Image 1: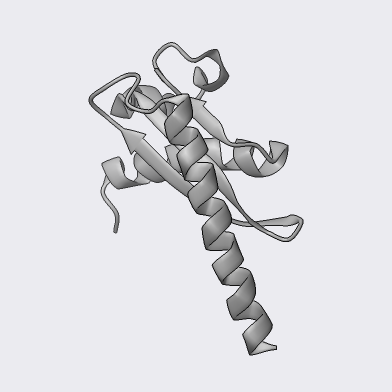
Image 2: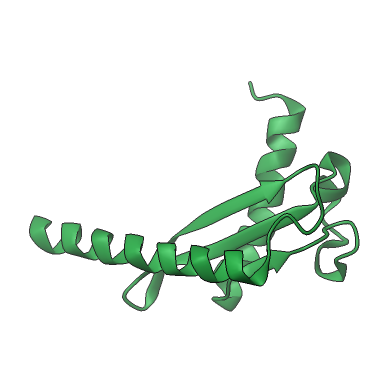
Length: 105
């Protein structure tokens, strides 16, 4: 079985992942301890996650996955320019996935 810490870690990912998928947005959390959007996510508080960056991976009009980064030690570990860079990387990855899918058809 997974350790409690791993389960908690997955919980954080799910809390933020659900928001990214539902609202179809990228999310930058500069300091999770102070972010009102995630006050209810006890797992974030328990694990003392400070910074989170999560962006959707698009396949056409659909979200096919996510890129998720977090940092436990530092608030403000990620910036707006990091988010822009990750969004660009996700778009490149999505282009590659589209090409692979077309070849398989």
